Length: 79
Image (tube, rainbow, N blue to C red):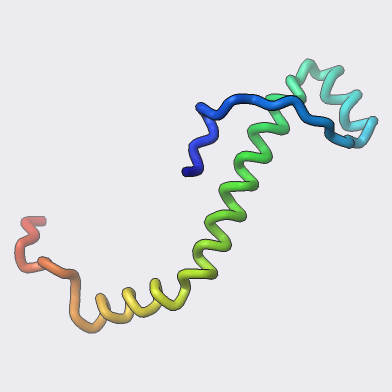
């Protein structure tokens, strides 16, 4: 779902700070690639932040159950 590596590219327009853009170009940076990578990382971060918030009650309930009852099938663990 969050695998962006195989998705096709789409041309888009961005409004960027001119000094930042000039410096990036002077440094030989690939602006499109850099923005794409940073945006993908931010999308993943926000996605998981929201997922954790939306599922907090379920995760807390599960953790409390494990704390009280132990891990399922723990008796069969060999380590």
